[in-house]
Image 1: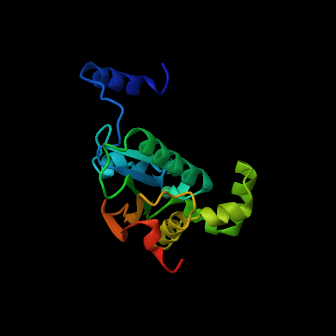
Image 2 (image 1 turned 30 degrees about the horizontal axis):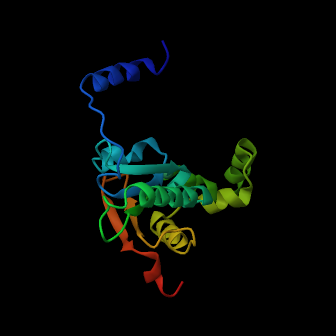
Length: 185
Ligand SMILES: [Zn+2]
């Protein structure tokens, strides 16, 4: 017995009625970037079905160089294999979703941050930059960061949203925009 045992039982039930789908673009044409917090699982909060959306999760749901590389790879892949199956308006929309009560908010405290730096091996400055104290502010910063990246395909749009842990509601902060429409950046 491991802690996985009850979950593996659930997998048996899942596999009993499972039919594999073909490799193709995500049905909802959305890539979600969000926090790894178990309270904000987008499969549940956004009602995702298998094959609906690509989900990239990290601490805070921040747009890091690794996230930008993943998105660049996904758009390259989609362009190579699914160009006939994707909508004329673009490959997919990247939805950055930050949330209230994010655990990264503790990183705004210098004492906590110092200890976290020792525990993770990450520089204090990097931890400070990753803190989501106000998700409305950080989600806007991350959408702009992604839109400004030279690695972002012009066929990809980016939107920003905040998930409220208290209400279960997702609010759109920035509507979907393509990189060339950013203008003043
Ligand atoms: Zn979080």
